[in-house]
Amino acid sequence: MIAQRPRAVFLDKDGTLVENIPHNVDPDRIALSRGAAEAVRTLAAHGFRLFVVSNQPGVALGLFEARQLDGVEQRLREMLPELSGFYYCPHAPDQGCECRKPACGLLQRAARRHGLRLERSWMVGDILDDIEAGRRAGCRTVLVDNGNESEWRRTPEREPHFTASDLSHAAALITRSLEPRHDRVAA
Image (cartoon, rainbow, N blue to C red; front, side, top):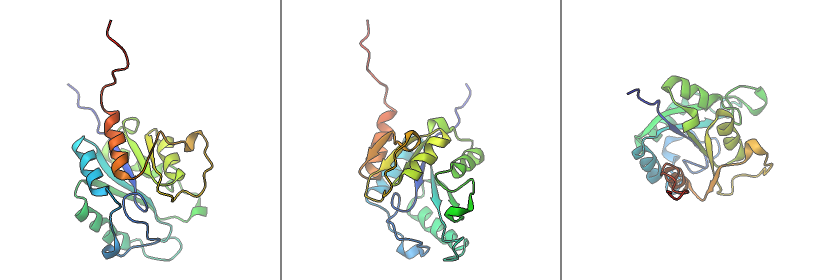
């Protein structure tokens, strides 16, 4: 039997996985969002690889050095040992890179490096740029509707598959999607 390539859940960092403190690179100030630890454990228990994907324009804007994100990653791995990877875009919004969400470069980079099947994977975030990145990569998507989205320009590529109140709710929606469907009555 041929082993299936792994599936993943890509998690936006600020406002989704951790409390949103703009441009925070102080590991001591990192606090998980409500339900985040439980959600990560649940998703890992269901066989998902977990990856943080985050826009970090503070690097390009000179607000902090890229090496400071190493401490952020280390702290997240201490808090959530189930994490498989940490990917970030260091570019400013106007730099036109391939990795800054809503582009899907971060997800594709993780998929190549870890042999992931994007069509079996999910993107979870708190703004529509996260949703668009997931859809562009071919993932299913969950918007954590916590009030952080301010530009509700919904287009098909920005329409989430599901909406959740927090990361724990998102994990429940994702794991529920794994259950066999019993829509048809056997003849």
